Amino acid sequence: MKELKIAQQVVEVSLFRKVSNFFRPMFPLPKIKWCEFINNKATKMSPVLSMITVSLKPHAPQFFEACPFTGDVYVNGLSTPTSVNTWLPKGNYKFTVHIYNNEDSLIIGAAIIMIRDN
Image (cartoon, rainbow, N blue to C red; front, side, top):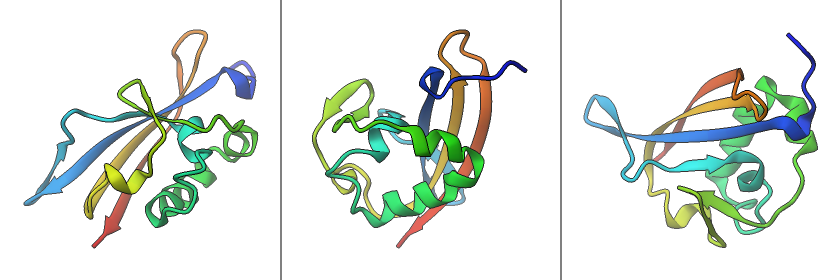
């Protein structure tokens, strides 16, 4: 596999919420540009965000070190200067995270993160 530059990598997160004994996609299903999301000033202090970030770092430490600050959270392609807690109600969640190369959309890493926020 060819070496990828950090700038060519993109992370998107799909969010599912637990309903009864299964996980159901949130509607509309949030797609978050992770680099912008983790560097947003409004979301940095969120306990849920901290748990997700800590869980993901072992999967792609270089990516997280190199993310530039942009100041926006992207949900469904919309830039919103808001806290993660305003759209993430308490509950059990599964985050499916893909890290892929921008040039050819090749997925170069993936992680499934379980979050409990009761």
